[in-house]
Image (cartoon, rainbow, N blue to C red):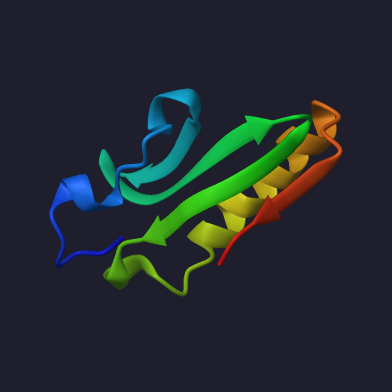
Length: 82
């Protein structure tokens, strides 16, 4: 995510309050997403996959995991701001 920017560029003030998920291949983190809960709503943000792994469905897998998780935990809303 934002490969030409410093790491601090992607940090959010409330990152410590979020839950962060990732997929790895051979111990290399290749895809990530973060979720933030507020008032029985979940927002997902910062979905990213390393360029060479894009198009393989890894982001889709993470989003499906988030959908399943929010349904299981009975949140009212799942949304993103793209």
